[in-house]
Image (cartoon, one colour):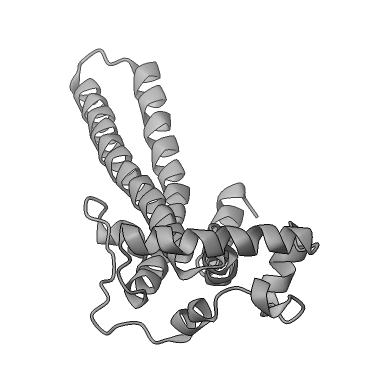
Length: 209
């Protein structure tokens, strides 16, 4: 088996395995780890903005690399037409093109993962009611009271995460994650939820993963 064969096998196996956050991680640690609906809403928005910025950066980097590859391939073509061609330059440029194309395959895997995460986060975002600045500030006292109360009760770090995953049954009622968050997570996504596709990266590139 060659390295190329092994990579092909690994890439095929990686299609359904998230290299970024799983949906379970997002629901239980990013959203439910915030204790109040307003903070959960904020956490979703922060993660959404971060992932979308990363996707936009990937889109432009991908487009720039497309130009670089086209430029290298044009150089190879032009050099091959010369009567006295520089074989070393042609080999060097050809290797550069091959390396760039192979590197993009892994990049595209990460892009697909990010798109899946953004779509999941957006579906959660659409389930929350829009929160005003006034509503957010009104929930801050409860957020910090619960957060500090849990720490004083010994629920911090891994212990706090485990309690959240186990539906907070071991935590005093007054210190539990707001039940509205669970209700929102368990509700069905809106039928009008948009599904993100990344403009600027060809569909064929995504399909080839």
